[in-house]
Image 1 (cartoon, helix red, strand yellow):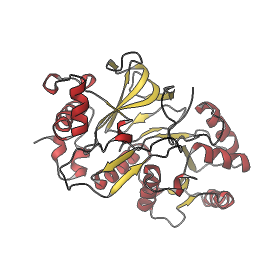
Image 2 (cartoon, helix red, strand yellow; image 1 turned 90 degrees about the horizontal axis):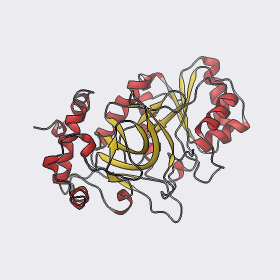
Image 3 (tube, rainbow, N blue to C red; image 1 turned 60 degrees about the horizontal axis):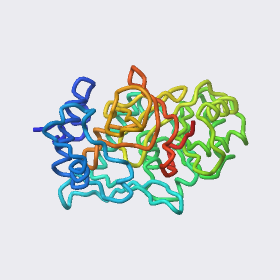
Length: 332
């Protein structure tokens, strides 16, 4: 019986480690080829025969754009949950839809990954500065922060749309009380807040999730972080990398250098030959997300990045022909 057929999501997630990651990925590939019509059609169109795929670099990676045009599902009919994550989009762009068959699997994976980097969420007050994302349904980012708040279960947790003065007062109160907290915000929201208020945040983590999307002039991650460090008085700005089509996250504790959670691995594909994959170097990012059991675990993104020898990576920009995205847009 395969790793991913465990009925208990926690057991499945806990079974994944650095030594068996690739073998689980190969088994999941064959399962999804057999049970995901969209992915099977894509794989067949490439002329790939699953029985001859023996390395993760030979697995076909589904272009992320398929989530805009198809229901990408690996599940038997009638097994769907009523949870659908949708991407933000411009008025001329079609949003991506990720049908989440097992929200318990997502919740368990989110909390497992968070604990891997930051410890127990019960230790934090969570403050979500997510203007525009709060105004639409289906945001995986809002869901993520809300789930962390539920685990924290502290009265001071809260989302902030345009209540900047209230957020300023809450941060001052947390600092005065010596409370541990995490301010999670989209880039333009954090910049807007930092331009209006200056603080010395000693006890908390400031985490940006990307997201400029026409709201401000594009800036490099370094420029964004330098402004936030100067105005908010933090020594480091943390970052989160995730997207609607994924159920795993990566986190950067400084300098925009991301490390993946245990269920996620990043490869690069050659920009001139998208079927040529490497475990290091620079190119478009392909992501293996072993939490994506019920959709597709092998995603070819539009992000350009660099992977280092230790498996960490940075996001350098986006392919010129890709549409703007809500949560991950940073330019070179």
